[in-house]
Length: 369
Image (tube, rainbow, N blue to C red; front, top):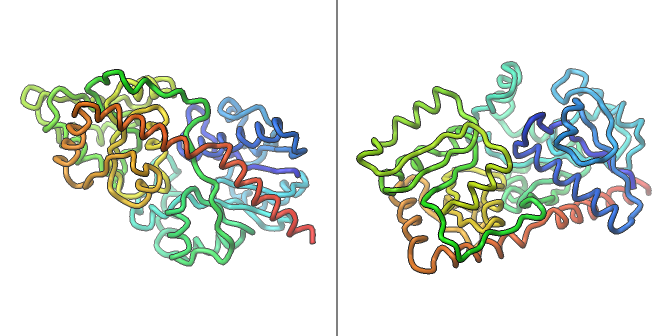
């Protein structure tokens, strides 16, 4: 079976969520094909050779950017590769004239309730983004062009079905922690630090986390992602002076994978008070490392974190501080660390790759009739 995977959403310098998702799935599929001699072959679609630095060593085809007007006709180029199945980690891939089974992906429905588009998109795309999310019907048009719609969690699958977003089957090709993660020792004493990994968009709800530091003397909050100067000043103004609170915040403005791993391994907990997620990858990454998680009490985090995470009211800084204090109770941090490691082990990229292969084989068989 010849599988073509759209890797054009891979970043050029360091992964974001969708970039990492696509690269990790490609890597797991390649490893599965090699280890089990299935006879399956993979081809990646890229739009910039610099993307190859973040992708596994898999044959590739250089084509147009997914943001190019020529995307409308990209299927004509993909047809020439004679794929048995094509997978795109987004729902926007052009389909005019396609002659192959297609799996499109919808990660979440966040932007229907939170319409602010990602800042890295060009201005015209941001305008279209807002218009697109005013109603479900444009999403239905996109998803119904596929043969199967993939998503990354059961929570999101239920939302897709409840919203009637597609007539096509909806399957889960889930997210997972990075392969080969070695957990930290649960019996070590963590540093008095907290980690936040994520954007600073409004729905991420970082403000109560900043305010919680007033109740956590001696702790440092590490905010890892890139941030604009204006947004940084807004958040800095929320924290009382260090002299009165005894706590501090540190803006890293982006970290490497190695720095992220080191900070996770030192910290007391990863904290996220987000109001909406399709999965919440930092949650499972922290658990795989053995770092406890404090998260918003909502269905997606309950699905991913199971009974291992500590769940809080996202509007209550005091609740965040109380959860941190719980982890300081004798034996509680080690217990939470071990539970997180066990919960993370229920997710793997191999499992996701097998789920994808099952769906791909079904599609191929159906198209061959």
